[in-house]
Length: 377
Image (cartoon, rainbow, N blue to C red; front, side):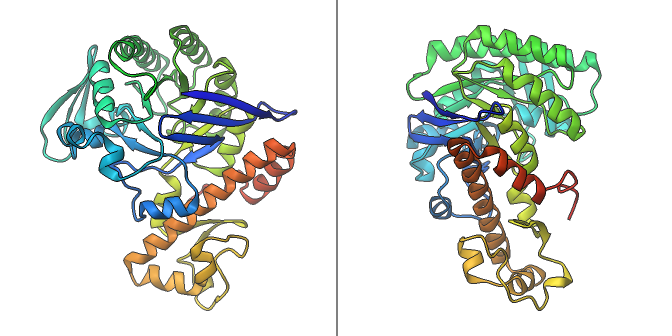
């Protein structure tokens, strides 16, 4: 892996560059669509190519359960299985410790969980998670970590942070002993909840371990937006300037703008695709609900500034009709458009950093997505 910073914004910490990985190069900052089990819900891989995406995220926990490492080893990894030639990042399954808490037991040596599919028991140790991601063949692997929700007490957060650091030490050791670092990079994850001293301590310890890249985890899990911004602003500058910085699980345009301004390079989130399937769409004028009666006889494009296939081809009235009629293609069109928006949005941010106009780009999009823009539509 090679990370090159080519441009910096003069007024903020925002930077643009290139992340060179085994399966290709990606321009930063960028957003990764979530292909949890090797596919983006309601979208074909050719759509991702058409939209210009250069990298996707898949999930270790889900791929381990289905199709399993035996199948992935037999086909040479996820790239061959998906017939996908671009970079892939895999989450470690650590978020499932948080999101599937009723099925998990956290132990000192790892996480024991019951499959949400058939109830079978499995143990994820830091070392085993690295080995599973080795079988997947992802360009970027993540360490096993423990994420706390909000609110969590200072004691709960510290216990999770200490476990994350112990697992990170074991992960980087196993990675250096068993993984081809030219093909796969490993990122450490900063935890520590909303407690600044814990974030500083965790970041400092991870930097000493000298990971190829670093992620900020444990945010966008229910904390107030003010706390999200405070912890982002605190944590990002603690990470090495010459390494890629990844904000996990953040897909709100306004929060991405804040994180980019603090020096974050990579993002992923299910939100743009999930809200699309629920009828909520991003546009150059903000979020809209395609279910609204206001669009019943509106035969104009969804977003006149968007060049995507959906906006070139269909009216708001027709898209509303498809959604209300329960047509499967409504989910396809909505998802296609929201990911088209996210790609155009990130390209605009990157161009602004390169051209020296990031301040104007940020102001424009913050006016389109005010602080309450993520309220349910």
